[in-house]
Image (cartoon, rainbow, N blue to C red; front, side, top):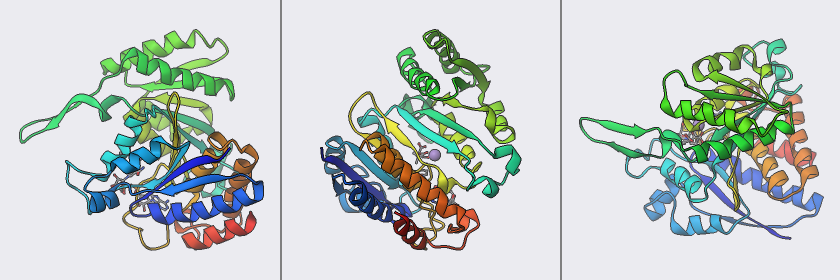
Amino acid sequence: MTYKITALPGDGIGPEILEGSIEILEALAKKFEFEYDLVTKDFGGIAIDKHGEPLPPETLEACQNSDAILLGAVGGPKWTNPKNRPEHGLLGIRKSLKLFANIRPTIVTEATAHLSPLKESLVKDTDFIIVRELTGGLYFGEPKYFNENQAVDTLTYTTEEITRIAHIAFKLALKRKNVVTSVDKENVLSSSKLWRQTLEQVSKEYPDVTLNHLLVDACSMHLITNPKQFDVIVTENLFGDILSDEASVIPGSLGLSPSASFGESGPSLYEPIHGSAPDIAGQNKANPSGMLLSLAMCIRESLHQPECAQHLENIVFNTINEGIATKDLGGSYSTSEVFEAIKKSI
Ligand code: NAD
Ligand code: IPM
Ligand code: MN
């Protein structure tokens, strides 16, 4: 079986981290003897410049016809028109492909424990996953508008939307430590009341899994004071966005965190959780680890090569352990030097 991959480098550091990762994929496919077809498409700011829109029909069509999508990052100071932003392309692709489940793992390995801004003893052995609902909530609720006097975003969730993401979280917990922490703002928000009630309902189907609830403000504190307590965190779209950037620095840097987004069926999307990092774009400074670990998730889940995925993950962490790391991790290596070291280790 030859899997189809669409690559969307995007803007800023997006192309810097994705192009090198595609070379790594080529080398891994040779070693592990599998095949794939890869096409690269315009997406984000670069697509606005070339086609007038961030998600041109040709790009969306290629994604729809793929097994997997690898995405760098989009956005930047050049594209600030509120009616036509690169970020709209990202939201458009998630919505069009119905990618409602976004998986964002945080793992502190031997290689990264000393890189954390938190105490090593506090973060060592941290291993949790944030399951972020990705196609609902404030990002997509209607009405949504702004004019001179008023701006409106709508936070809405249906029982169906909450139920399907809850099942993803409970099923993941069954394969791990059997604990789900649902994060909401139940003391204030109606959508959170329905969220909590629905999580309780779904939990009845998973008697072996413990369900805890945390309010989002307290959760943000618990994440950095006792990250080891968590197994699977499930939360709505915006809370998941914010908490996952916070979680990413527990092992050392935003540049380390990967993600995978799944729908009920169809292609899955793999992207680091960080953005286009305009402040370091074009300087060969970006940490490619989040992209490479997203590639590993793609290799495991969409290309069905678990050994290859594990090999890549080991290499990424070993390389960091050897001190071959970018500046965000306290290292002095460039992006291309990290890619070179990783290629040699394959
Ligand atoms: P950002 O994630 O791009 O950067 C935040 C900080 O982290 C910056 O200092 C940056 O240099 C650093 N950083 C991020 N990734 C890094 C990496 N791989 N290696 C080293 N350092 C890294 O967030 P921002 O600055 O708030 O946003 C910039 C643009 O990116 C905005 O247009 C935003 O909308 C967009 N964005 C896109 C995505 C995406 O495409 N998935 C995600 C988040 C933000
Ligand atoms: C992310 C990003 C996006 C989000 C933006 C760029 C739309 O921050 O993938 O985490 O908010 O989902
Ligand atoms: Mn984000």
